[in-house]
Image (cartoon, rainbow, N blue to C red; front, side):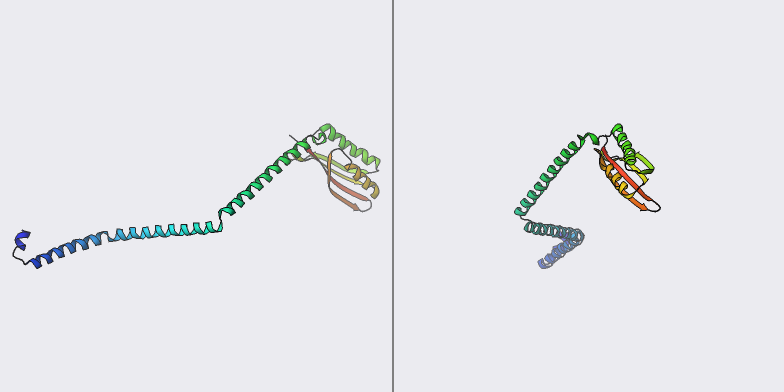
Length: 200
């Protein structure tokens, strides 16, 4: 039917018809695929832009951190690691040495004798003890305050000083961490003492 319709037409007109048909098909195809092609094109542009930005940032980083700088940083890290290991070894050694001191090991008998020595020393130095309390400290560490002692007393000033000095003259590790002396009608002294030790 197409051939019959075109057989009487001049050649130029037939060519124009073919051009119009191909043009219409091309225009239809262009409109059909334009949106998706444009979207893909824009996605590609975004990806290229992102890769370019990352590449530029990497180049800047490499310029600021040449291999020589990285080598120095690695050497510094190694030095700190070596120091850390040395400190750990020293701490382990000190801990071991502390644990070999017999007076630091929790011993009811030795610490009971120390409590008794406080009373004896008070008598020697003319100290009148008003209150005398002791209790085991709630210490969960392996080393620290184990026995807490509080003493309230009255005496002459020089006798009080001699008494305080005598409390520290012990093989135990004694820490007098609070002293409060008040002069009213008499001289009153409050003492808080802690005995350090090791628990297991």
